[in-house]
Image (tube, rainbow, N blue to C red):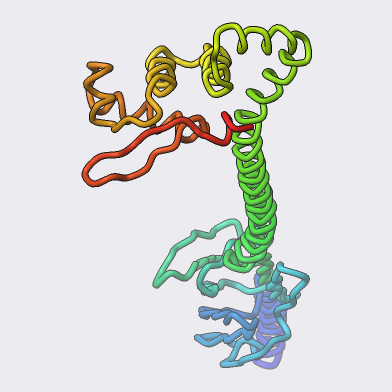
Length: 293
């Protein structure tokens, strides 16, 4: 009878043991409470409390890979863990583009590093993270932008410099041409009039006993009839007077000194009159070259 009882006890123990191991295997034999640190070069360091051999104080590159600017961390275990807790610490300036792991996760930032904390029970350990370094992306884009900007600035500078050079050349040519035409215009007009009525001019000179200078002075006043009133008055006075000081001219015109100086300066630029310094004042006279010609 005792032998029968012992046999039944052994049978119960075997059945119970089988059921226990079956139940335990269905919920996993492994546990983990680990910290996973990823360096900038992709080196993965895992340490903590675990009975899973591959998670016990290791450093490896086998869990990371890189494609262009994108890094991929893939820690996937086919074994079921009864419970696990992990803290993933990524390098600084990292942006996570994709993550696949336990639903129970949270994100933290500690010392400028992104931390991902996950918890799981009775499930396979799965941690798949795609990330990239922000400074690499910004660096490439900013470098391209900087290169494009440099090219645009260079083109703009070339256009500006070319425009300034062309404006300077045109201004110099215009200034030279103006000076040339001011003198040439008087001569051409007088010559044309002399061709048309040359005989009348000779008769007038003989009849009125006027010298050639007086005639040219008269033509000079007619030629510059388009000038402002003050400048015409100055030319008229200089036609009467061979030379006159600027001080006397001021009294004759009875206008402010600054106005006289401005109009005299304009006539000098046009090459109509000549200004010579004489003591504390200036001596003014018509341009003899125009008259002689």
